[in-house]
Length: 321
Image 1 (cartoon, rainbow, N blue to C red):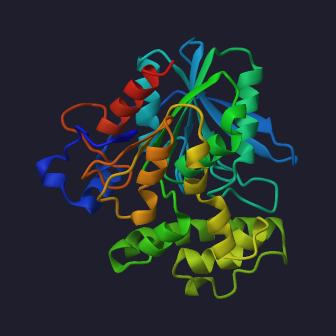
Image 2 (image 1 turned 90 degrees about the vertical axis):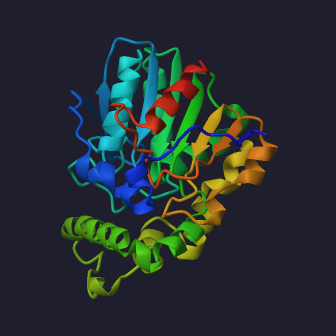
């Protein structure tokens, strides 16, 4: 323990295909917009982060981290904001650098292991004195960042930081990158590379001569992209070193607050390395739940207005005040 061998999630009958579960929320889920209050904060390297708060007047806060090429307006983020606001929590949806609608200043972006910005945000909301409890919810890449951060903090984590839930997380970046190269994931990979390329084009105009987009159309996978851009821009030798140092899996046994990881067994983005049963068995604070179905950030539920993953995250955090 604490591997949670029993889970109550069952995919709707007509959505039991892993790709349908993954795509359906993006295309068909309709949620009312969140009325965010945006705050821009400075980072130690003179860049900025845009934080979108949703206030209820609570002294409990949930920090929400989106996935790769997401932002605070993605449906999976707004669904989580709504359920926690309704349950009496403030939320702050953290936009990673370059994801808030404006390119960041520095010659860098965000990446799967960049925990410094999360530390900056955590310090900012803690120093405000507004909150007695702070919790985390992280999706996909954001979940990897969150789990790595909690492991890095270990027993030194601030007492106000109480619990965390991670959903659809590639804990083993190399393993997940290889999984996404498979033919059945072609549509996702193409979308990610195209979106990252658009951000690079903006950054190339900011820093003429320092970023080359020559032959960018030949890039087909994360290995090629991370070798050429992510690794050198963020101080890694190559993609292999980036993946090895930034995978959260190696940090899980050092987490010291209650943390739940939910990874569906049919998640098309995840390989076997992203199901850390041994790590959960060795850490009484780290819980692993692996429903048979759910897709990637899916967990669709009918006719409930909230998805199963949202109710599961809320119940877990409520249980760990």
